[in-house]
Image (cartoon, rainbow, N blue to C red; front, side, top):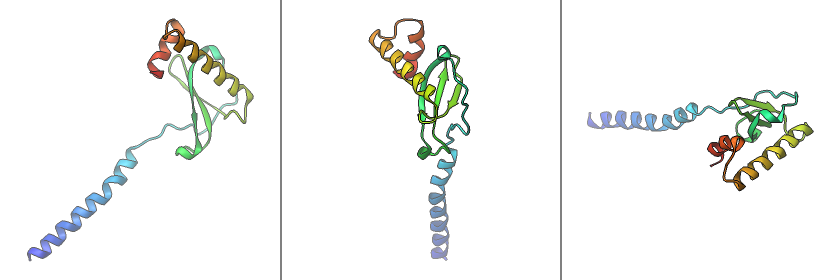
Length: 116
């Protein structure tokens, strides 16, 4: 009788331990660009960018621009649109200048919180 209770207990414990990783992985939600816009984005509204890679769990490659108002805009990868590469170079130069001046100035102040 005791061995039957112990068997049920061990089976229940094994079931709980095996199901925990699946639950925690299901809770992870990725923010991915499902589509991209080929419309050129004005550089004066942009704050930063990052690259989205298909292999990281997203369905397509993209460049995600963050505006000064905190909106994320999905653009095609540099290989599909030349203007995207120009914008990323512009933002990289701005970030370098802000780092050199220790984030002094109106445009650099917002970058300080995301790049530090």
